[in-house]
Length: 265
Ligand SMILES: [Zn+2]
Image (cartoon, rainbow, N blue to C red):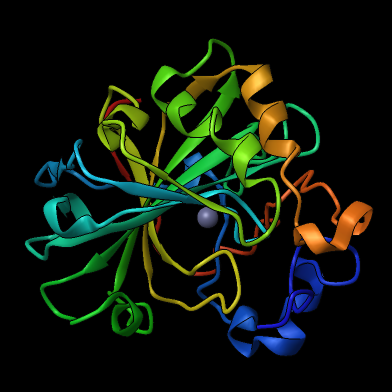
């Protein structure tokens, strides 16, 4: 994929993705607005269960369109809830944000945007052999979405954010050996909406069971401003390596997909 094939500028932003990535035109696209009046109660689903590894080496990467933490996910798993008995492994997690506070989430709730959104991306190891294989299947991926709002500094997330100055440009990568618990990125209350959707970045493959937590978590304004200082170009671009001020895809129609609601109101 060439450097400017897709991104979030006027020239290569979400409105242009459908030209090069036909799947982005599909009927199962993400993100969506969560119209809470349309959500059907999921009843008494089995609980969502996650077990994440704390002590292993992770990489923090700037792929040019976000920051991303790559996991060696063989000792972490997610199952239960809408995923049934299939076991999904954590592959990577990353963040979306906006140019100003109050925008930046990909999903919106009754039309309201939040200041950012974390995505924890898992793949179905029960049915598939690799992340790549799973990413092309309707039940291949499960993404936990966590809405971010401006408030107190998030201490666990800060272990990543304090490394962002070292991955300013596209292609930069640092390793992180300090313990980090992905479970501490999730809200305390297990209440969420779920629907079938897609990756929100090209190729926008329709392979994701979305699980969006209802409760946002807080990050500080300073933490968000460090994210906006990341650049979408390589260091060789010099001043042309523009700041990644925003990296969220606008919502797309839910259509006739079922949106289910689990947990308290
Ligand atoms: Zn994402």
